Image (cartoon, rainbow, N blue to C red; front, side, top):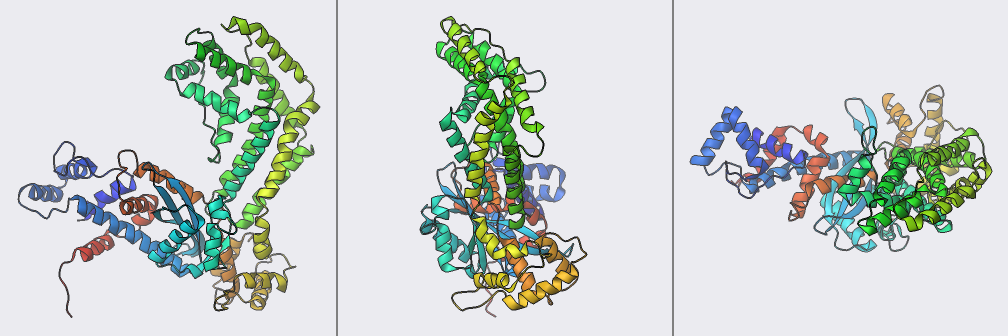
Length: 593
């Protein structure tokens, strides 16, 4: 039985298919599971004897599709039981929800729980984000998704009153104040603080900035996307592009409005390979047939050869690279709101320094020099489209003369400052929701501050007071006394973050001494920063429910996803536990005692 469990666990953790066209041992197309059993039988005498009996006399060989599903369900339920047990032990938790459509055009809702748990080996607290399930969302409205969330919490036996935070993207059905999911959950539990995804906010800021800048001049990112589409849709064009590669391969990336780092990746690939891409386009344009391809290549070469495009490419890449670093840091599971606010403030300060010419004065000068160097590497020889060649050369020269080579002031005013100005405005607008979080929890960011007053603690107490029975998670006066006492303990320490403060209390065995402070820190650390974990689960969804497995049932999909996503947690569960659960489910005898 252990071998069967290990085989099922291996296939599920690797997101591989189980079944084939038949369910017969030693058949050519009987699927991965039976082929794995056949392979084990070649080297394992016990499995060889079991397979021999299964193919001759025994009818109970535990190799059927139904047994596979039951083992998968036992594993997934064991992992889920472990997660729910940890959540209940922590008591307070947050949910993160996101939706996507799978290959069978079913809207899948991914549910993640975030909580603070104690690591028994290290005797330290850490933040966990765990997958709960995929649920089919038939109603995409705020009320419909809200009902799906509450039903799922009820199924896994989690009390909605212990959910003190909720995190979603910024869609109207999720974040709307009156009809969104957050409002539906807040009606059930007013203490459930809504925190929109910070990475999604950052991406929306980029979308807003790109749209406004493009409307003023030309669609820069549309041209970047056209380069990717032109070469990727034809293997012959892609081969011509690779012919200009000197080291490795030339890659181009798709520009997505939803993928957080797509713009940075697309501009990076284009920036470092622009002369080669331009040369490849001219080579394709010199081939007279097909005419539409030649014309498209010629037109695209003209666009990316313009100096204003090169300037935008250099500026956008340098700005996006700074934003992408922040975006990746925001996706960390252990990140808290205090660190999130610090990162956004650092990004804002970086943009302000560039805008005000503070800090390194040579940064923007280097951008301008890079743009000039790239332009000088481009080949402006006429293409086979002779009737356009002269006009094209004149247009290119006019474009070059539009911005003088040594005019750095014009470069800043035309290309750098407009992007920075819009980005700063949108950055402040998109992240103003964090001001409310800071108003309630701000004093917990750094307990070294001596100006923490009773009013700070009272705001937190009010937020964490139940409107149904008036119960309080923290007492303001006691919390203030505990903070003042704790400040003396950390006066000479190196603790800087809320998680450090919490682990300091644990390391000194002072949890009974500081119950209110411990609770307040746990609740604060539970607040989600992004829904990156929910987004990551969609990668497993695409691997598991691929185009060959679109008829998979919802329960099987959710169970396989649980095993694959939480594979490390499953490895920590003894096989005996899974086998005992399977045996209990298969027991036919009824006890009358």
